[in-house]
Image (cartoon, rainbow over all chains, first blue to last red):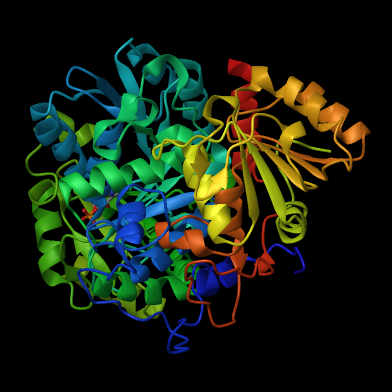
Length: 426
Length: 194
Ligand SMILES: Cc1ncc(COP(=O)(O)O)c(C=O)c1O
Protein backbone atom coordinates (compact mmCIF):
# COMPACT_ATOMS: atom_id res chain seq x y z
CA UNK A 1 0.00 0.00 0.00
CA UNK A 2 2.81 2.39 -0.77
CA UNK A 3 1.46 5.51 -2.34
CA UNK A 4 4.23 5.88 -4.85
CA UNK A 5 2.81 7.24 -8.06
CA UNK A 6 3.42 4.62 -10.74
CA UNK A 7 4.95 5.92 -13.93
CA UNK A 8 3.26 6.14 -17.27
CA UNK A 9 4.74 2.87 -18.59
CA UNK A 10 3.57 0.97 -15.51
CA UNK A 11 0.05 2.32 -15.93
CA UNK A 12 0.13 1.50 -19.65
CA UNK A 13 0.71 -2.16 -18.74
CA UNK A 14 -1.34 -2.53 -15.55
CA UNK A 15 -4.05 0.08 -15.04
CA UNK A 16 -7.52 -1.45 -15.02
CA UNK A 17 -6.34 -5.04 -15.42
CA UNK A 18 -6.24 -7.71 -12.75
CA UNK A 19 -5.96 -11.51 -13.01
CA UNK A 20 -9.36 -12.93 -13.91
CA UNK A 21 -11.52 -13.78 -10.88
CA UNK A 22 -12.60 -17.22 -12.06
CA UNK A 23 -9.64 -18.59 -14.03
CA UNK A 24 -6.66 -16.53 -12.87
CA UNK A 25 -5.90 -15.66 -16.51
CA UNK A 26 -3.25 -12.92 -16.45
CA UNK A 27 -3.93 -11.38 -19.86
CA UNK A 28 -7.31 -9.66 -19.98
CA UNK A 29 -9.81 -12.21 -21.33
CA UNK A 30 -12.00 -11.34 -24.31
CA UNK A 31 -15.50 -11.51 -22.83
CA UNK A 32 -17.11 -12.17 -26.20
CA UNK A 33 -20.68 -12.28 -24.94
CA UNK A 34 -23.70 -10.10 -25.56
CA UNK A 35 -25.17 -10.45 -22.07
CA UNK A 36 -24.61 -11.42 -18.45
CA UNK A 37 -26.86 -13.47 -16.15
CA UNK A 38 -28.40 -11.82 -13.11
CA UNK A 39 -28.12 -13.34 -9.65
CA UNK A 40 -31.85 -12.86 -9.06
CA UNK A 41 -34.68 -10.46 -9.83
CA UNK A 42 -33.55 -7.94 -7.24
CA UNK A 43 -30.01 -7.90 -8.67
CA UNK A 44 -31.44 -7.34 -12.15
CA UNK A 45 -33.60 -4.48 -10.93
CA UNK A 46 -30.64 -2.87 -9.11
CA UNK A 47 -28.50 -3.04 -12.23
CA UNK A 48 -31.17 -1.63 -14.50
CA UNK A 49 -31.92 1.12 -11.98
CA UNK A 50 -28.19 2.09 -11.89
CA UNK A 51 -28.09 1.17 -8.19
CA UNK A 52 -25.45 -1.55 -8.38
CA UNK A 53 -22.14 -1.96 -10.19
CA UNK A 54 -22.21 -4.77 -12.72
CA UNK A 55 -22.75 -6.00 -16.24
CA UNK A 56 -26.03 -6.25 -18.10
CA UNK A 57 -25.53 -6.22 -21.85
CA UNK A 58 -22.46 -5.45 -23.97
CA UNK A 59 -24.03 -2.42 -25.65
CA UNK A 60 -23.91 -0.74 -22.22
CA UNK A 61 -20.73 -2.27 -20.82
CA UNK A 62 -18.43 -5.27 -21.05
CA UNK A 63 -15.61 -6.44 -18.73
CA UNK A 64 -12.94 -6.40 -21.48
CA UNK A 65 -14.00 -2.91 -22.51
CA UNK A 66 -14.00 -1.84 -18.85
CA UNK A 67 -10.30 -2.66 -18.55
CA UNK A 68 -9.60 -0.52 -21.60
CA UNK A 69 -11.72 2.28 -20.15
CA UNK A 70 -9.96 2.32 -16.81
CA UNK A 71 -6.56 2.10 -18.48
CA UNK A 72 -7.10 5.13 -20.71
CA UNK A 73 -8.74 7.06 -17.84
CA UNK A 74 -5.61 6.38 -15.76
CA UNK A 75 -3.21 7.36 -18.55
CA UNK A 76 -5.11 10.61 -19.16
CA UNK A 77 -5.60 11.39 -15.46
CA UNK A 78 -9.40 11.34 -15.73
CA UNK A 79 -12.05 10.01 -13.35
CA UNK A 80 -13.64 7.55 -15.78
CA UNK A 81 -13.91 6.65 -19.44
CA UNK A 82 -16.28 5.07 -21.92
CA UNK A 83 -15.08 3.05 -24.90
CA UNK A 84 -17.14 3.22 -28.09
CA UNK A 85 -16.96 1.89 -31.65
CA UNK A 86 -14.85 4.65 -33.22
CA UNK A 87 -13.45 8.10 -32.71
CA UNK A 88 -16.43 9.55 -34.53
CA UNK A 89 -18.81 7.66 -32.25
CA UNK A 90 -17.01 9.22 -29.27
CA UNK A 91 -17.61 12.71 -30.67
CA UNK A 92 -21.28 11.94 -31.35
CA UNK A 93 -21.91 10.51 -27.88
CA UNK A 94 -20.16 13.42 -26.14
CA UNK A 95 -22.12 16.09 -27.98
CA UNK A 96 -25.43 14.27 -27.53
CA UNK A 97 -25.06 14.82 -23.77
CA UNK A 98 -24.35 18.54 -24.19
CA UNK A 99 -26.35 19.94 -27.10
CA UNK A 100 -30.03 20.39 -27.91
CA UNK A 101 -31.32 21.59 -31.29
CA UNK A 102 -30.37 25.26 -31.66
CA UNK A 103 -27.30 24.95 -29.44
CA UNK A 104 -23.80 25.70 -30.63
CA UNK A 105 -20.31 24.31 -30.41
CA UNK A 106 -17.17 26.28 -31.16
CA UNK A 107 -14.69 24.08 -33.00
CA UNK A 108 -11.12 24.66 -34.13
CA UNK A 109 -10.96 25.07 -37.87
CA UNK A 110 -7.92 22.77 -37.99
CA UNK A 111 -9.45 19.35 -37.36
CA UNK A 112 -9.31 15.94 -38.96
CA UNK A 113 -11.24 16.30 -42.26
CA UNK A 114 -13.72 13.63 -41.18
CA UNK A 115 -14.53 15.63 -38.07
CA UNK A 116 -15.10 18.75 -40.14
CA UNK A 117 -17.56 16.72 -42.24
CA UNK A 118 -19.26 15.23 -39.18
CA UNK A 119 -19.75 18.64 -37.59
CA UNK A 120 -20.76 20.39 -40.80
CA UNK A 121 -23.24 17.86 -42.15
CA UNK A 122 -24.43 15.21 -39.69
CA UNK A 123 -24.48 17.47 -36.64
CA UNK A 124 -26.06 20.34 -38.50
CA UNK A 125 -28.90 17.99 -39.41
CA UNK A 126 -29.46 17.45 -35.65
CA UNK A 127 -29.78 21.21 -35.24
CA UNK A 128 -26.36 21.46 -33.57
CA UNK A 129 -24.59 24.49 -35.00
CA UNK A 130 -20.86 24.83 -35.28
CA UNK A 131 -18.92 28.09 -35.13
CA UNK A 132 -15.41 27.68 -36.53
CA UNK A 133 -12.50 29.39 -34.82
CA UNK A 134 -8.80 29.61 -35.58
CA UNK A 135 -6.68 27.59 -33.13
CA UNK A 136 -3.77 29.97 -33.80
CA UNK A 137 -5.88 32.95 -32.72
CA UNK A 138 -7.38 32.54 -29.24
CA UNK A 139 -9.42 35.73 -29.64
CA UNK A 140 -11.40 34.07 -32.43
CA UNK A 141 -12.74 31.56 -29.85
CA UNK A 142 -13.69 34.36 -27.49
CA UNK A 143 -15.50 36.22 -30.25
CA UNK A 144 -17.47 33.11 -31.20
CA UNK A 145 -19.03 32.65 -27.74
CA UNK A 146 -22.81 33.24 -27.66
CA UNK A 147 -25.52 32.40 -25.10
CA UNK A 148 -26.14 29.19 -27.09
CA UNK A 149 -22.53 27.96 -26.86
CA UNK A 150 -22.38 24.62 -25.04
CA UNK A 151 -18.82 23.42 -25.63
CA UNK A 152 -15.47 24.13 -27.28
CA UNK A 153 -13.78 21.41 -29.33
CA UNK A 154 -10.09 21.32 -30.36
CA UNK A 155 -7.39 18.81 -31.31
CA UNK A 156 -4.23 18.82 -29.16
CA UNK A 157 -2.06 18.07 -32.18
CA UNK A 158 -4.14 18.84 -35.24
CA UNK A 159 -4.60 16.50 -38.19
CA UNK A 160 -3.27 16.79 -40.87
CA UNK A 161 -0.55 19.41 -40.33
CA UNK A 162 0.63 18.33 -36.88
CA UNK A 163 0.19 21.85 -35.49
CA UNK A 164 0.16 22.20 -31.71
CA UNK A 165 -2.80 23.91 -30.03
CA UNK A 166 -2.39 26.27 -27.08
CA UNK A 167 -4.72 24.21 -24.88
CA UNK A 168 -4.33 26.38 -21.77
CA UNK A 169 -5.28 29.58 -23.58
CA UNK A 170 -8.41 28.02 -25.09
CA UNK A 171 -9.26 26.37 -21.74
CA UNK A 172 -9.31 29.85 -20.23
CA UNK A 173 -11.88 30.93 -22.84
CA UNK A 174 -14.02 27.88 -22.04
CA UNK A 175 -13.85 28.56 -18.31
CA UNK A 176 -14.89 32.14 -18.78
CA UNK A 177 -17.79 31.08 -21.01
CA UNK A 178 -18.82 28.41 -18.48
CA UNK A 179 -18.63 25.59 -21.01
CA UNK A 180 -16.52 22.43 -21.09
CA UNK A 181 -13.39 22.16 -23.22
CA UNK A 182 -13.31 18.95 -25.27
CA UNK A 183 -9.89 17.93 -26.58
CA UNK A 184 -9.36 15.30 -29.26
CA UNK A 185 -6.01 13.87 -28.14
CA UNK A 186 -5.74 11.26 -30.90
CA UNK A 187 -2.54 12.43 -32.55
CA UNK A 188 -0.66 13.14 -29.34
CA UNK A 189 -1.79 10.23 -27.15
CA UNK A 190 -1.40 10.77 -23.40
CA UNK A 191 2.26 9.82 -23.74
CA UNK A 192 2.95 13.17 -25.40
CA UNK A 193 0.19 15.42 -24.02
CA UNK A 194 -2.24 15.06 -21.11
CA UNK A 195 -4.88 17.67 -21.96
CA UNK A 196 -6.57 17.38 -18.55
CA UNK A 197 -3.42 18.78 -16.93
CA UNK A 198 -3.82 21.80 -19.19
CA UNK A 199 -7.51 22.48 -18.55
CA UNK A 200 -9.52 20.02 -20.66
CA UNK A 201 -12.81 18.82 -19.15
CA UNK A 202 -13.40 15.99 -21.62
CA UNK A 203 -10.84 14.11 -23.73
CA UNK A 204 -11.80 12.03 -26.76
CA UNK A 205 -9.69 9.67 -28.83
CA UNK A 206 -9.83 7.69 -31.97
CA UNK A 207 -8.27 4.53 -30.47
CA UNK A 208 -7.86 3.43 -34.08
CA UNK A 209 -4.61 5.45 -34.25
CA UNK A 210 -1.63 5.48 -31.86
CA UNK A 211 -3.36 3.95 -28.82
CA UNK A 212 -4.28 0.74 -30.67
CA UNK A 213 -1.26 1.49 -32.78
CA UNK A 214 -1.22 -1.45 -35.19
CA UNK A 215 -3.80 -0.39 -37.76
CA UNK A 216 -5.98 -3.41 -37.00
CA UNK A 217 -8.95 -2.22 -34.92
CA UNK A 218 -11.33 0.69 -34.90
CA UNK A 219 -12.28 2.19 -31.57
CA UNK A 220 -12.95 5.41 -29.72
CA UNK A 221 -12.99 6.58 -26.13
CA UNK A 222 -14.37 9.40 -24.01
CA UNK A 223 -12.49 10.42 -20.84
CA UNK A 224 -14.21 12.44 -18.11
CA UNK A 225 -11.81 14.77 -16.29
CA UNK A 226 -14.29 15.17 -13.42
CA UNK A 227 -13.68 18.91 -13.47
CA UNK A 228 -16.91 20.40 -14.78
CA UNK A 229 -19.92 21.33 -12.64
CA UNK A 230 -22.85 20.21 -14.80
CA UNK A 231 -25.57 21.49 -12.50
CA UNK A 232 -24.67 25.15 -12.93
CA UNK A 233 -27.43 27.28 -14.55
CA UNK A 234 -29.34 24.20 -15.75
CA UNK A 235 -27.36 24.40 -18.99
CA UNK A 236 -26.84 20.65 -19.26
CA UNK A 237 -30.22 19.06 -18.43
CA UNK A 238 -29.11 15.54 -19.48
CA UNK A 239 -26.83 15.61 -16.44
CA UNK A 240 -28.67 17.84 -13.99
CA UNK A 241 -32.36 17.01 -14.48
CA UNK A 242 -34.23 13.87 -13.35
CA UNK A 243 -34.07 11.13 -15.99
CA UNK A 244 -37.52 9.68 -16.64
CA UNK A 245 -36.13 6.38 -17.95
CA UNK A 246 -34.21 5.86 -14.70
CA UNK A 247 -37.09 6.68 -12.33
CA UNK A 248 -36.06 10.29 -11.85
CA UNK A 249 -32.36 9.80 -11.06
CA UNK A 250 -30.21 12.89 -11.59
CA UNK A 251 -26.93 11.74 -13.13
CA UNK A 252 -24.66 14.43 -11.66
CA UNK A 253 -26.16 14.17 -8.18
CA UNK A 254 -25.80 10.38 -8.16
CA UNK A 255 -22.39 9.95 -9.79
CA UNK A 256 -20.49 13.08 -8.80
CA UNK A 257 -17.19 13.62 -10.56
CA UNK A 258 -17.63 10.84 -13.12
CA UNK A 259 -21.21 11.77 -14.01
CA UNK A 260 -20.31 12.73 -17.55
CA UNK A 261 -18.83 9.31 -18.34
CA UNK A 262 -21.92 7.66 -16.86
CA UNK A 263 -24.26 9.87 -18.90
CA UNK A 264 -22.34 8.94 -22.05
CA UNK A 265 -22.84 5.26 -21.16
CA UNK A 266 -26.38 5.05 -19.83
CA UNK A 267 -27.93 7.74 -22.04
CA UNK A 268 -25.58 7.93 -25.04
CA UNK A 269 -24.29 4.45 -25.72
CA UNK A 270 -27.51 2.82 -24.53
CA UNK A 271 -29.66 4.80 -26.97
CA UNK A 272 -27.36 5.54 -29.91
CA UNK A 273 -25.75 2.11 -29.84
CA UNK A 274 -22.14 2.43 -31.12
CA UNK A 275 -20.67 -0.18 -28.78
CA UNK A 276 -17.06 -1.36 -29.13
CA UNK A 277 -16.54 -5.05 -29.84
CA UNK A 278 -14.73 -6.75 -26.91
CA UNK A 279 -12.34 -8.26 -29.44
CA UNK A 280 -11.33 -4.79 -30.63
CA UNK A 281 -10.99 -3.70 -27.00
CA UNK A 282 -8.56 -6.58 -26.45
CA UNK A 283 -6.49 -5.67 -29.52
CA UNK A 284 -6.33 -2.02 -28.47
CA UNK A 285 -5.42 -2.93 -24.87
CA UNK A 286 -2.54 -5.04 -26.15
CA UNK A 287 -1.44 -2.09 -28.25
CA UNK A 288 -1.54 0.30 -25.30
CA UNK A 289 0.91 -1.87 -23.32
CA UNK A 290 3.67 -0.71 -25.69
CA UNK A 291 2.40 2.84 -26.25
CA UNK A 292 5.36 4.58 -24.54
CA UNK A 293 7.92 2.55 -26.53
CA UNK A 294 6.16 2.98 -29.83
CA UNK A 295 5.30 6.63 -29.40
CA UNK A 296 8.89 7.59 -28.65
CA UNK A 297 10.11 5.68 -31.72
CA UNK A 298 7.36 7.25 -33.87
CA UNK A 299 8.49 10.72 -32.74
CA UNK A 300 12.21 10.06 -33.14
CA UNK A 301 11.69 8.66 -36.65
CA UNK A 302 9.38 11.52 -37.60
CA UNK A 303 11.93 14.10 -36.52
CA UNK A 304 14.65 12.40 -38.62
CA UNK A 305 12.36 12.23 -41.66
CA UNK A 306 11.27 15.87 -41.23
CA UNK A 307 14.91 16.97 -41.01
CA UNK A 308 15.70 15.03 -44.17
CA UNK A 309 12.77 16.52 -46.07
CA UNK A 310 13.54 20.06 -44.94
CA UNK A 311 16.80 19.98 -46.92
CA UNK A 312 15.43 18.13 -49.98
CA UNK A 313 15.47 20.11 -53.28
CA UNK A 314 11.97 18.90 -54.32
CA UNK A 315 10.40 20.12 -51.07
CA UNK A 316 9.29 23.70 -50.57
CA UNK A 317 8.23 23.48 -46.92
CA UNK A 318 7.96 21.05 -44.00
CA UNK A 319 5.40 21.59 -41.24
CA UNK A 320 6.78 19.68 -38.29
CA UNK A 321 6.54 21.25 -34.85
CA UNK A 322 9.66 19.37 -33.78
CA UNK A 323 11.87 21.40 -36.16
CA UNK A 324 13.56 24.40 -34.49
CA UNK A 325 12.32 26.95 -37.03
CA UNK A 326 8.70 25.73 -37.05
CA UNK A 327 6.02 28.21 -35.97
CA UNK A 328 4.68 25.63 -33.46
CA UNK A 329 8.09 24.74 -32.02
CA UNK A 330 7.63 26.81 -28.85
CA UNK A 331 4.20 25.26 -28.21
CA UNK A 332 5.65 21.81 -28.86
CA UNK A 333 8.39 22.33 -26.29
CA UNK A 334 5.77 23.47 -23.78
CA UNK A 335 3.05 20.86 -24.38
CA UNK A 336 4.84 17.87 -25.92
CA UNK A 337 8.50 17.97 -24.87
CA UNK A 338 9.03 14.24 -25.61
CA UNK A 339 8.29 14.73 -29.28
CA UNK A 340 6.05 16.43 -31.81
CA UNK A 341 4.15 13.31 -32.80
CA UNK A 342 4.44 11.41 -36.06
CA UNK A 343 1.84 12.99 -38.31
CA UNK A 344 2.89 16.02 -40.32
CA UNK A 345 2.70 17.56 -43.77
CA UNK A 346 5.16 18.91 -46.26
CA UNK A 347 4.73 20.80 -49.51
CA UNK A 348 6.13 19.92 -52.90
CA UNK A 349 7.52 22.45 -55.31
CA UNK A 350 5.74 20.53 -58.10
CA UNK A 351 2.23 21.16 -56.65
CA UNK A 352 -0.82 18.87 -56.92
CA UNK A 353 0.68 16.59 -59.61
CA UNK A 354 3.92 16.10 -57.70
CA UNK A 355 1.83 15.03 -54.70
CA UNK A 356 -0.05 12.46 -56.73
CA UNK A 357 3.24 11.17 -58.24
CA UNK A 358 5.06 10.90 -54.94
CA UNK A 359 2.31 8.76 -53.48
CA UNK A 360 2.42 6.37 -56.41
CA UNK A 361 6.25 6.10 -56.40
CA UNK A 362 6.67 5.15 -52.74
CA UNK A 363 7.47 1.46 -52.04
CA UNK A 364 7.53 1.20 -48.26
CA UNK A 365 5.02 3.89 -47.33
CA UNK A 366 1.42 2.73 -47.78
CA UNK A 367 -1.04 5.01 -49.51
CA UNK A 368 -4.10 4.92 -47.29
CA UNK A 369 -6.45 7.00 -45.17
CA UNK A 370 -5.22 6.32 -41.67
CA UNK A 371 -2.57 7.51 -39.23
CA UNK A 372 -0.88 6.05 -36.18
CA UNK A 373 0.04 2.62 -37.53
CA UNK A 374 3.32 0.76 -36.90
CA UNK A 375 3.76 1.07 -40.69
CA UNK A 376 4.58 4.38 -42.34
CA UNK A 377 1.67 5.87 -44.24
CA UNK A 378 1.21 8.56 -46.82
CA UNK A 379 -1.75 10.42 -48.23
CA UNK A 380 -2.37 13.40 -50.46
CA UNK A 381 -5.20 15.11 -48.49
CA UNK A 382 -6.35 17.39 -51.33
CA UNK A 383 -7.30 14.40 -53.49
CA UNK A 384 -8.61 12.19 -50.65
CA UNK A 385 -9.54 12.98 -46.99
CA UNK A 386 -10.08 16.68 -47.62
CA UNK A 387 -11.40 16.40 -51.19
CA UNK A 388 -14.96 17.30 -50.08
CA UNK A 389 -13.79 20.72 -48.86
CA UNK A 390 -13.65 23.71 -51.21
CA UNK A 391 -10.22 25.17 -52.03
CA UNK A 392 -10.34 27.92 -49.40
CA UNK A 393 -11.37 25.44 -46.69
CA UNK A 394 -8.61 23.07 -47.83
CA UNK A 395 -5.99 25.73 -47.31
CA UNK A 396 -7.48 26.78 -43.95
CA UNK A 397 -7.44 23.22 -42.65
CA UNK A 398 -3.83 22.70 -43.80
CA UNK A 399 -4.59 20.58 -46.88
CA UNK A 400 -3.57 22.80 -49.80
CA UNK A 401 -3.09 21.04 -53.21
CA UNK A 402 0.74 20.75 -52.93
CA UNK A 403 0.58 19.26 -49.42
CA UNK A 404 1.38 15.62 -48.62
CA UNK A 405 0.69 14.08 -45.20
CA UNK A 406 2.89 11.43 -43.63
CA UNK A 407 2.30 9.23 -40.63
CA UNK A 408 5.70 7.90 -39.67
CA UNK A 409 5.86 4.32 -38.41
CA UNK A 410 8.34 2.45 -36.26
CA UNK A 411 10.47 0.95 -39.02
CA UNK A 412 14.19 1.84 -39.34
CA UNK A 413 14.37 5.53 -40.13
CA UNK A 414 17.13 5.01 -42.73
CA UNK A 415 14.74 2.86 -44.78
CA UNK A 416 11.99 5.48 -44.61
CA UNK A 417 14.36 8.23 -45.70
CA UNK A 418 15.69 6.11 -48.57
CA UNK A 419 12.15 5.35 -49.77
CA UNK A 420 11.16 9.03 -49.74
CA UNK A 421 14.38 9.98 -51.48
CA UNK A 422 13.88 7.54 -54.35
CA UNK A 423 10.22 8.52 -54.74
CA UNK A 424 11.02 12.24 -54.82
CA UNK A 425 13.69 11.64 -57.46
CA UNK A 426 11.60 9.29 -59.61
CA UNK B 1 -6.74 18.66 6.92
CA UNK B 2 -7.24 19.32 3.23
CA UNK B 3 -10.89 18.73 2.40
CA UNK B 4 -10.51 19.35 -1.33
CA UNK B 5 -8.70 16.06 -1.92
CA UNK B 6 -8.28 13.09 0.40
CA UNK B 7 -5.45 10.64 0.46
CA UNK B 8 -6.68 7.15 -0.37
CA UNK B 9 -5.20 5.84 2.87
CA UNK B 10 -7.39 8.23 4.88
CA UNK B 11 -10.60 7.02 3.20
CA UNK B 12 -9.40 3.42 3.29
CA UNK B 13 -8.74 3.45 7.03
CA UNK B 14 -12.20 4.89 7.68
CA UNK B 15 -13.99 2.31 5.53
CA UNK B 16 -11.86 -0.52 6.94
CA UNK B 17 -12.47 0.43 10.58
CA UNK B 18 -16.07 1.58 10.97
CA UNK B 19 -18.70 -1.07 11.55
CA UNK B 20 -21.93 0.82 12.27
CA UNK B 21 -23.15 3.71 10.13
CA UNK B 22 -26.13 5.96 10.88
CA UNK B 23 -27.41 7.51 7.68
CA UNK B 24 -29.12 10.85 8.36
CA UNK B 25 -31.59 11.69 5.61
CA UNK B 26 -31.90 8.09 4.39
CA UNK B 27 -34.79 7.74 1.98
CA UNK B 28 -37.05 4.72 1.44
CA UNK B 29 -37.62 5.93 -2.14
CA UNK B 30 -35.65 3.54 -4.31
CA UNK B 31 -34.43 6.13 -6.83
CA UNK B 32 -32.73 8.39 -4.27
CA UNK B 33 -28.93 8.22 -3.99
CA UNK B 34 -29.27 7.68 -0.22
CA UNK B 35 -31.27 4.52 -0.88
CA UNK B 36 -28.59 3.13 -3.24
CA UNK B 37 -25.81 3.93 -0.83
CA UNK B 38 -27.69 2.47 2.14
CA UNK B 39 -28.42 -0.75 0.29
CA UNK B 40 -24.87 -1.12 -1.00
CA UNK B 41 -23.22 -0.49 2.36
CA UNK B 42 -25.64 -2.95 4.04
CA UNK B 43 -24.70 -5.56 1.41
CA UNK B 44 -21.04 -4.98 2.13
CA UNK B 45 -21.62 -5.89 5.76
CA UNK B 46 -21.97 -2.54 7.56
CA UNK B 47 -24.49 -2.26 10.39
CA UNK B 48 -26.72 0.41 8.85
CA UNK B 49 -29.21 2.59 10.76
CA UNK B 50 -31.61 4.83 8.76
CA UNK B 51 -32.31 8.19 10.45
CA UNK B 52 -35.24 10.22 9.15
CA UNK B 53 -38.06 11.62 11.31
CA UNK B 54 -40.42 11.56 8.32
CA UNK B 55 -40.32 7.78 8.04
CA UNK B 56 -40.46 6.49 11.61
CA UNK B 57 -42.55 3.32 11.69
CA UNK B 58 -41.13 2.17 8.36
CA UNK B 59 -38.00 0.14 7.69
CA UNK B 60 -35.23 0.25 5.09
CA UNK B 61 -33.96 -3.21 4.08
CA UNK B 62 -35.39 -4.54 7.34
CA UNK B 63 -33.77 -1.81 9.49
CA UNK B 64 -36.31 0.39 11.32
CA UNK B 65 -36.07 4.16 10.82
CA UNK B 66 -35.27 6.26 13.88
CA UNK B 67 -36.18 9.93 14.23
CA UNK B 68 -32.82 11.21 15.45
CA UNK B 69 -29.31 10.15 16.37
CA UNK B 70 -30.25 10.24 20.06
CA UNK B 71 -32.80 7.48 19.43
CA UNK B 72 -30.16 4.94 18.37
CA UNK B 73 -29.73 2.20 20.95
CA UNK B 74 -26.09 1.32 20.18
CA UNK B 75 -22.76 3.07 19.64
CA UNK B 76 -22.33 4.39 16.11
CA UNK B 77 -18.95 4.60 14.41
CA UNK B 78 -19.86 6.85 11.53
CA UNK B 79 -22.58 9.33 10.65
CA UNK B 80 -23.24 9.63 6.94
CA UNK B 81 -25.14 12.87 6.34
CA UNK B 82 -27.39 12.90 3.31
CA UNK B 83 -28.52 16.51 3.69
CA UNK B 84 -27.79 19.80 1.89
CA UNK B 85 -24.80 21.80 3.10
CA UNK B 86 -27.13 24.19 4.95
CA UNK B 87 -28.50 21.36 7.16
CA UNK B 88 -25.18 19.88 8.24
CA UNK B 89 -24.38 21.92 11.35
CA UNK B 90 -27.35 20.82 13.50
CA UNK B 91 -26.61 17.18 12.72
CA UNK B 92 -22.96 17.59 13.72
CA UNK B 93 -23.99 19.38 16.92
CA UNK B 94 -26.34 16.52 17.74
CA UNK B 95 -23.62 13.98 16.96
CA UNK B 96 -21.20 15.69 19.33
CA UNK B 97 -23.68 15.17 22.19
CA UNK B 98 -23.64 11.37 21.78
CA UNK B 99 -21.82 9.14 24.19
CA UNK B 100 -19.70 7.42 23.14
CA UNK B 101 -18.83 9.91 20.41
CA UNK B 102 -18.92 8.67 16.81
CA UNK B 103 -15.51 8.38 15.15
CA UNK B 104 -16.37 9.79 11.72
CA UNK B 105 -18.62 12.45 10.21
CA UNK B 106 -19.15 11.84 6.50
CA UNK B 107 -20.96 14.40 4.33
CA UNK B 108 -22.39 13.19 1.05
CA UNK B 109 -21.44 14.10 -2.47
CA UNK B 110 -22.35 17.77 -2.94
CA UNK B 111 -22.46 18.52 0.80
CA UNK B 112 -19.81 20.58 2.51
CA UNK B 113 -19.77 22.69 5.69
CA UNK B 114 -16.27 23.70 6.72
CA UNK B 115 -17.38 25.20 10.05
CA UNK B 116 -19.16 21.97 11.00
CA UNK B 117 -16.10 20.01 9.94
CA UNK B 118 -13.86 22.14 12.14
CA UNK B 119 -16.14 21.59 15.10
CA UNK B 120 -16.13 17.82 14.63
CA UNK B 121 -12.37 17.71 14.12
CA UNK B 122 -11.83 19.78 17.28
CA UNK B 123 -13.69 17.02 19.15
CA UNK B 124 -11.33 14.42 17.68
CA UNK B 125 -13.58 13.09 14.92
CA UNK B 126 -12.46 12.36 11.37
CA UNK B 127 -14.37 14.22 8.67
CA UNK B 128 -15.00 13.51 5.00
CA UNK B 129 -16.95 16.00 2.88
CA UNK B 130 -18.44 15.90 -0.62
CA UNK B 131 -17.84 12.17 -1.17
CA UNK B 132 -20.06 9.09 -1.40
CA UNK B 133 -19.01 6.09 0.72
CA UNK B 134 -20.51 3.71 -1.83
CA UNK B 135 -18.42 5.19 -4.62
CA UNK B 136 -15.28 5.25 -2.46
CA UNK B 137 -15.77 1.63 -1.37
CA UNK B 138 -16.42 0.62 -4.96
CA UNK B 139 -13.36 2.54 -6.11
CA UNK B 140 -10.90 1.25 -3.52
CA UNK B 141 -12.09 -2.34 -4.01
CA UNK B 142 -12.06 -1.69 -7.79
CA UNK B 143 -15.59 -3.08 -7.96
CA UNK B 144 -16.57 0.20 -9.61
CA UNK B 145 -14.12 -0.49 -12.44
CA UNK B 146 -16.91 -2.45 -14.12
CA UNK B 147 -18.26 0.98 -15.08
CA UNK B 148 -15.03 2.29 -16.56
CA UNK B 149 -14.23 4.34 -13.47
CA UNK B 150 -10.59 5.02 -12.71
CA UNK B 151 -10.09 3.28 -9.35
CA UNK B 152 -6.60 4.81 -9.10
CA UNK B 153 -5.42 1.49 -7.69
CA UNK B 154 -3.43 -1.43 -9.06
CA UNK B 155 -3.22 -5.09 -8.06
CA UNK B 156 -1.53 -8.18 -9.51
CA UNK B 157 -3.63 -10.47 -7.29
CA UNK B 158 -6.55 -12.47 -8.58
CA UNK B 159 -9.73 -10.40 -8.35
CA UNK B 160 -12.54 -11.55 -6.05
CA UNK B 161 -15.93 -12.40 -7.51
CA UNK B 162 -18.20 -9.87 -5.84
CA UNK B 163 -21.27 -11.59 -4.44
CA UNK B 164 -24.08 -10.41 -2.22
CA UNK B 165 -23.03 -9.61 1.33
CA UNK B 166 -19.33 -10.01 0.66
CA UNK B 167 -16.70 -7.75 2.18
CA UNK B 168 -14.11 -6.76 -0.44
CA UNK B 169 -10.47 -5.97 0.21
CA UNK B 170 -9.73 -2.26 0.04
CA UNK B 171 -6.00 -2.79 0.38
CA UNK B 172 -4.85 -2.43 -3.22
CA UNK B 173 -1.91 -0.22 -4.13
CA UNK B 174 -3.11 3.33 -4.62
CA UNK B 175 -1.68 5.69 -7.10
CA UNK B 176 -2.07 9.41 -7.32
CA UNK B 177 -3.42 9.77 -3.78
CA UNK B 178 -6.38 12.07 -3.81
CA UNK B 179 -4.84 15.12 -5.37
CA UNK B 180 -4.44 15.63 -9.08
CA UNK B 181 -4.35 18.64 -11.35
CA UNK B 182 -7.94 17.81 -12.22
CA UNK B 183 -9.15 17.54 -8.63
CA UNK B 184 -7.53 20.85 -7.78
CA UNK B 185 -9.25 22.48 -10.72
CA UNK B 186 -12.60 20.90 -9.84
CA UNK B 187 -12.29 22.25 -6.30
CA UNK B 188 -11.41 25.69 -7.60
CA UNK B 189 -14.33 25.68 -10.04
CA UNK B 190 -16.66 24.86 -7.12
CA UNK B 191 -15.31 27.64 -4.93
CA UNK B 192 -15.68 30.19 -7.69
CA UNK B 193 -19.29 29.34 -8.39
CA UNK B 194 -20.46 29.15 -4.77
C1 LIG C 1 -7.75 13.41 -34.96
C2 LIG C 1 -8.80 12.41 -35.31
N1 LIG C 1 -9.97 12.41 -34.64
C3 LIG C 1 -10.95 11.54 -34.93
C4 LIG C 1 -10.81 10.61 -35.93
C5 LIG C 1 -11.95 9.68 -36.22
O1 LIG C 1 -11.71 8.43 -35.69
P1 LIG C 1 -12.36 7.07 -36.23
O2 LIG C 1 -11.86 6.87 -37.61
O3 LIG C 1 -11.88 6.06 -35.24
O4 LIG C 1 -13.85 7.28 -36.18
C6 LIG C 1 -9.61 10.56 -36.66
C7 LIG C 1 -9.46 9.57 -37.75
O5 LIG C 1 -8.63 9.71 -38.62
C8 LIG C 1 -8.58 11.47 -36.33
O6 LIG C 1 -7.42 11.48 -37.00
